[in-house]
Amino acid sequence: MTDGRNLSMLMDFYELTMSNGYLKNGLGDTIVYFDMFFRRVPENGGYAIFAGLEQVISYIESLKFTEEDIEFLRAKGIFCEEFLDYLRDFKFTCNVWAVPEGTPVFPNEPLVTVRGPVIQAQLIETMLLLILNHQSLIATKASRIVRAAQGRPVMEFGSRRAQGADGAVYGARAAYIGGCAGTACTISDRDFSVPALGTMAHSWVQLFPSEIDAFRAYAECYPDNCVLLVDTYNVLKSGVPNAIKVFRELAEKGYNCGGIRIDSGDIAYLSKKARKMLDEAGFPNHKIVASNSLDEYLIRDLLVQGAALDSFGVGERLVTSKAEPVFGGVYKLVAVEENGKISPRIKLSENTAKITNPGFKKPVRLFCKNTGKALADVILLENERIDESSPYEIFDPEHTYKKKLLTDFSVKELQKAVFEKGVCVYDRPSVEEIREYCQQELSKIWDEVKRFENPHKYYVDLSHDLWNMKQELLDRYFHL
Image (cartoon, rainbow, N blue to C red):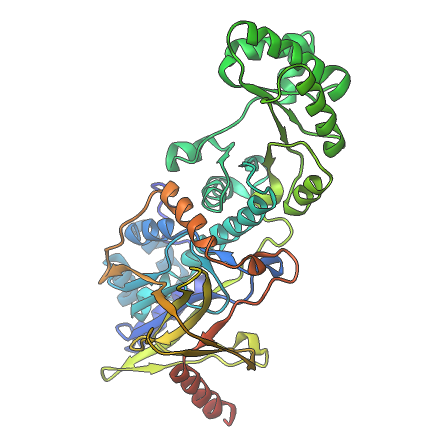
C-alpha cells in the first residue's frame, strides 16, 4: 500500500489526539488487545474473502514520522512535546495475528488481533481498516462473479472506473485473489504478477480505413492469439464476417488460435449467432469473450439464456463492488492487561449487532473428517482448546435454540502469527499462492453457503467460557 510513499499520517485525527492523551495520562505503555472484524457480508452473501494482509505488513514495516510530520503536528498547537518526541522515535513493537489472505471468513470473528502498547495499536487503526476493507470487499465480489461464470475465465477490466489509482491497482490484486484470471491493469502485473490481459478498443478499429483493415493489422501484430473486437459497427453483418476472413488468412499461415469480443448489444443473442457462424466457418475452438457492465447476476442470466460465451471481462461493477461498495470492517478494543492479567472489555449498544465479543480470542474452524467440508467456526478464548475426540455442541449465537452436535471433526486455528514484538515472522505467499489457497478453502465451504440469494447461515459460535464472560459483562454494564 505504501509503494515508497510515507503514509504514516494517513489516519483519523482522533488517533493522534487520543494517543497524545494516553501519554499525558500515563497510559501510553498500557498493553491492550484490539480485534479487526466485520459485522455483515456485503450484498447479504453467505461468506467473504479476506484480503490485503500483505499491504498491512508493508505499511507497518514502513511506519515512521518525519520531521515534516512532527512540524505539521506541532503547528496544530494541541500536542505536547513529549508526544511529538514519541512520534519522532516511533518503533512498532506489537504482536499481530491474522487470518491468511484468501480465507473465506464470516461475521464477528476476529480476522486480525493486535496486542501491544495502546498508542501503537491505536495509530495503525485507520490504515489497517482502509486496506483490509477495500481488498476484502473486492476479493469477495470477484469470488461471486467467478462462481457465476461456472468455470469460464473472468478478467478484471475496471481500472478506468476505479476510485483512484490505489483502487485500480489493489482492486486488481484483490480480484485475482478472489479468482479472476487476470487484469487489464498493467502495473498490477508488474508489481504483483497478476497476469495483464487485453486486446483492442473501438478506437483501434475506428482509426483504420475499414474494419477489415483494422483486423488484419492487429492479426499481423499478434497472430498467436488474435482476439478481435467485433461490435464497433455491426456484430453480425460486418464484425464476425470480417473476423472470419482474418482467421482464415491466419490459418493459411499456420495460426489457429484466436477469438472475438462482444462489448455491446444483446450479448446472449449475438453470441449464439456468432458461435454458429464461427463453427460453420471451421473455427469451433475460437473463443467468444463478453464485456460491458457485467456482474454476477448478468453473467448468470446470460448463461441461463444459453449464451455461447467462453470468458468475461468485468469492469466497474467488480472493481468498485458497485452493488454494495463498503465492507464494514471495524477495529475494537477487547482487552487490557492489568497487573499481569488480561481484563476483558466490551462495547455495548442498543443496536445488538454492535455489541462486541470481549477478551483475547482466536477463531477456529471445524471440518467434517468424512467430507472435508467446513461445519462451523468457533471463537475461543486464547487459552481454550476443542477436543477432537469428543462431541462438540455448537449454537447459532443469534438464535440460541438452534444447535448442532458435531462428531468426527477436525479443528484448525484460523489466525497465524504475523508480527512478534514488532518483527514480521509471517512467511508471505505470492499472490498466485494466495489465489490457489482461496480456491482450495472455498471448495471446503458448502454450496448452500455460497448461494447469491438466501444463503445458508454458517455457524460462528462462541465457546462456553467466552459466552459466559460476555454475559457477565452485559449484566454488569446494562445495570449501570
